[in-house]
Length: 386
Ligand code: GLY
Image 1 (cartoon, rainbow, N blue to C red):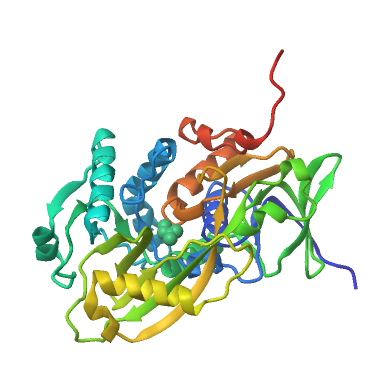
Image 2: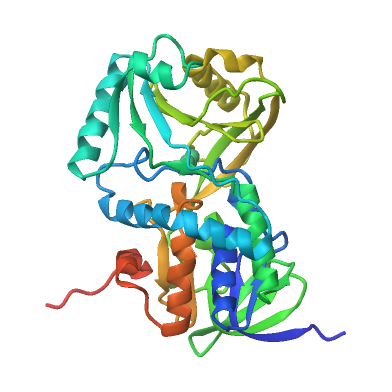
């Protein structure tokens, strides 16, 4: 039997939220588009909490990434409305804001510094006393020493986002090949598509690599063109607030506890997500007793009442980490191969702008000015003129 052979303008390798938004936007712009993934709509988004935390997850030295994060946060309301209209599926987008709190004097000093940094950048973030934090969120521990109220950091349900993107892509005419790419094909040093595990051959004008944490090891891509992306493990828990029970929290609540980050993301359907570890352990996705213990211990210090809730799910996923924690969006060193990967902690947040940027690149050949700092070429060693 001959393997089947298909041709498209664009092949997107990887059907997580980043691959799907790229494919959806490409198809909307009239490009014949296919996605290769054995389980499209899965990937890291199945694990992620869905915080849109541009301001509360701000790190020193990441001001360029902050601009992109803020741009994507601003895009979310219209992006969510468009996706919901296109599919009839809700995303669970909640403009609920975030409260970041301190539990001891060291945490308080850390949070004060973050506040100074945020305000120096003109970001909206208000310092609250411990009492004011508890007035906003009465389930918080009495020992909370103060906190930051960030009304612009919202949340979305990543599983619903993935489901809606999958539906939108199909409705826009994207063809789904439910198989992994075995290797990227090249002809005369140009990417020309991929061969899939099931033997299907796909020829494409442009191939987009969007396989998240696995992007750094795609067979067929020459070493110099592979993105420097590595897996960063995150363990996460899902609790459930029983129907009829008063809501536990009205907004996302987060804290640094003994140097580790913990966040609680309450959904309207009663799900309460507790995340997340950050571990450099390669491809390991084991849920460990230690990981669950640390998350529950820290979450319990923050909101003591939550240990009464049923624990309904424990999971570990792999963030696609890059050397500077920012995504790689644009042309790779291999002609014909584009990258949309390396989103690290911000994949859900950056989904709307990633779709816009990749569609622009696929249709015009260049990326918007705001995306230039995220070109994959920033990691390519270039000979300096003498
Ligand atoms: N942005 C949250 C996380 O990666 O855990």
